[in-house]
Length: 410
Image (tube, helix red, strand yellow):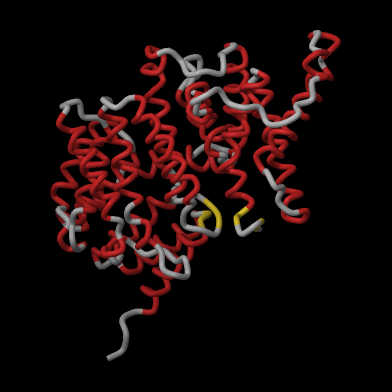
């Protein structure tokens, strides 16, 4: 569904953090404001496709959300003595403080120290990235009901903290920075490789992640992990033009036309990661950016230095212990040492990752390389059945069908 040549969903996702920031700034209650903004977004998604997009979508959303807040205050007026707030109907959208970036303030507010990372990160992705509860549950490999409860508890804690809508002190920024960077990392990933829907990616989400990370980089220019994360995003996003065909279908890395890669982004990303690594305080985002740089600097897929990539994944796995890193290390091991080396690393991942489509997909690719065609077909079919992204599903189904058809005659 589109309005004015734009996707209604994409427009609302982009406006969500701006509207939430404006409403929280005016009313000072994050939990209630977040609920009110969700109501406004739902109203827009329901009415705009048929009634048309308003002249000022942001102001429309703020006005509707403010009315929801007014209704809440009115219902509690007798007990809380807030008749004066309830009676004050906003005339227009509240203006942010001069020079303030409401999105960044929202991020640091959601990453409040009273919250665990498991609560702060999905709350921020919902408030800033506009991800649904289902999308968050899929990203964190938990049931949707569990994620809904986690977000609800996180909102209650932020409300109870009485946190002001303002950037925290420098000490508090440092304390919350790790969670903020992880949120931006996940937001970019959801934009670059969308977990569900008809499109392979969402440029609005990855673009917003890059924009905010540039803001964090400007605020903390000497932090090597901030630079590393920005470099990782730029080096990855540089491949976007070659990642899909004209019809939107996925093009794997091995088959991409590298002349389409954005060399300006690659140069900026390489400069960022080079400078960050020289500082001598290596973190996980810097290592991931270094891996991306090795890929981007190879003129052809065959020229990729897989031994270097494998060494970097060994380091990254030691840093994080992440099963997804192990999965990627298995791919690098297969490329550097042969498919059986990669398959050996997949053995212990079933219990750690569960029935995730990426595990089935990687195993299928490695089985194909090892000559186990029947196993590869079963793996591709299993992966296709477990992904909610339609483009990825089509690619996996096509791979299985291609293998099942056997080599061409003659």
